[in-house]
Length: 354
Image (cartoon, rainbow, N blue to C red; front, top):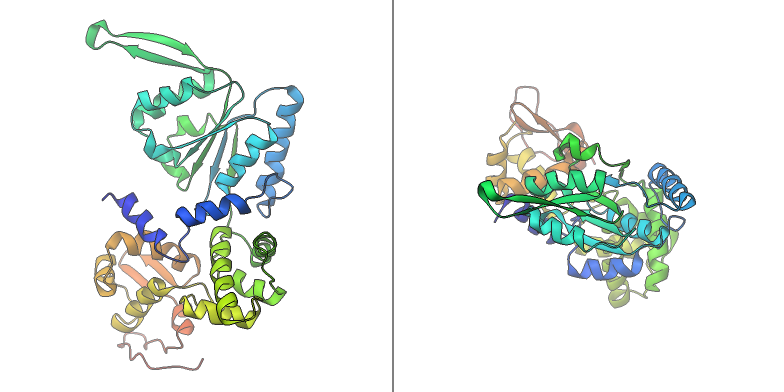
């Protein structure tokens, strides 16, 4: 299993993971907004994209190529569908891992219709030969098909109809500059504020036909790690709890009880997050400790700790990466109600004031 595959598998298994599994994809299709006016959050990206699409429609031309970057679950796929809908164009969806040879890309590009929107998810994982072919396709709407091998090989130019490429990536830095420069519009998706997630939850609750009180939505939003996909997933789990063990209405108390069952705490940490922090605090005195040692202590793979747990812990200010290893911040000690060790002294792991 490759590192990317291991990371994806680990994320799918987590309730607060930001990768969509089969159930999520089916539900997301029903919950996705259909136009920019209905899309919640990402105000700057939405405004800028609206100008790009309106101008293209006024000119009667295809829209510029669009690159969307940001963490999983923030709405990159949804925006690609909205772009196609706003341009009244067909949408073709594929992904970087599916394009491992230049011939794979040629097959996709040669079947595009004029004005069609091609959504290329995880564009940073395309093969290098396919990337180099994409340069010409984006700029000149042409690809060269190589026929034959060796000295007798011949390049046959293949003209393409004008199309719009929408690329999505969680790691924009991995894209080579020649590819990034060919996108006419680049938008970076930010994590959502709790108030924005509350609006997402209320909208999803209406579509799911479940009653949610304002404080119930706020409780779910506060544990959703700034990600709409996680907010919708937690909403569905709380809905299940409310239907089975309550009166079907999602209140603050019901949400707290439901998420306690699913081991998602008030800050959005799940079992893996807490295991990493507790090992760092109680076994290693808050660090510094090497990543491999920390992974062994929690019984997980090194890549799982680094790619799945660490990003959120660092973003929340609970863990820091240093040249000497991982260290816990004062906020981590406070979160678990533990007293930090004296400077230079061993950790005692005593319970502190809450």
